[in-house]
Image (cartoon, rainbow, N blue to C red):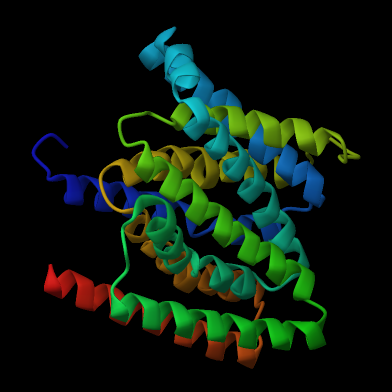
Length: 286
């Protein structure tokens, strides 16, 4: 990693993180655990595993990093906790494709927030892309009202907004390590789920699916995604989530045959195409 540029480091971290995340939606669908049980284990298991890893690496410096993160750490704890909850509840209340298409809007939301809070002003092409993606999202929302999926789609959009806020927060605190704040966020997720959980029991395939999902699709990626914006812009990190938007529904379709609506496919194609073209132009110009 020492021989890589900051651009290469950030891009590699974001890419590996998203590739680990792609089967996450499928695991959620395959699990028979109820919503709040999933939220609980997806908070508790990553909290324990990453905390132990951080304590082995940093020892008591872990707590120094946590307390020195200041208001950036508090903001990241809040947004990280929120997105971890809304993502699972969204998946349980709409098609996987709908949730992931909403999350695909995170790069454009990051660009808007980056312009407001970091003064990283988007160019004209970016503003056009932002307008197109929002129009496509409204189209999907309109379809979801008729299908009864509106609640899940709204939570998907909130997840995207939370990812954008989190990425911009990390970008604005490049000198700070916010992984300890993310660890605390996972603990809060587990504690919040305790208020609603009815059954802690894991049986059958869930004994494998839930721990595997919690470590491979949650613990490892959240560490990588928390580090990546220290090297590249927040919007650029979130662009890698387009891979999840494309690959995630394919996993679900191949294994359990869940198909998105025509409107979701149309809106998703518009969003992904607009952001992909925008990204290609930016990379070519740079």
